[in-house]
Picture 1: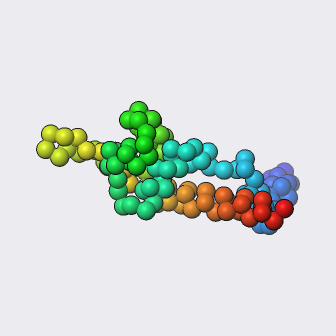
Picture 2 (picture 1 turned 180 degrees about the vertical axis):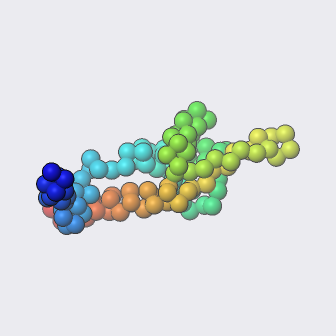
Amino acid sequence: MAKSNTARIARTEPQPAARAKALSTPADLDRLIHERVRLAIVSALAVRDRLTFNELKALLKTSDGNLSVHARKLEDADYITCDKSFEGRVPKTEYRLTALGRRALERYLDHMEALIRATRTR
């Protein structure tokens, strides 16, 4: 019985070419990064080692609440880290992109490039 299940699983696995083609469908986008503010956060952190909450807020021209909610979603997914400290008596929140977040951004950009190439060749 186990042998037939293994065979059935092997037959349903997509071939490498089919897998690559399937990646270029819009439905397969990483929805966590695809949202505008979260993409902006990850992109900004990809080019800077770390950014404070206020630096990100000014760069993205967004509200405290909006930035906070989107940063928390990325933090929950381990795409970014959040370090809270004090400078004197002033709280300071710094964000950094994790290795997982960098890989997710690279996959997202590769996927978008594949969609663009597929659209242009039509």
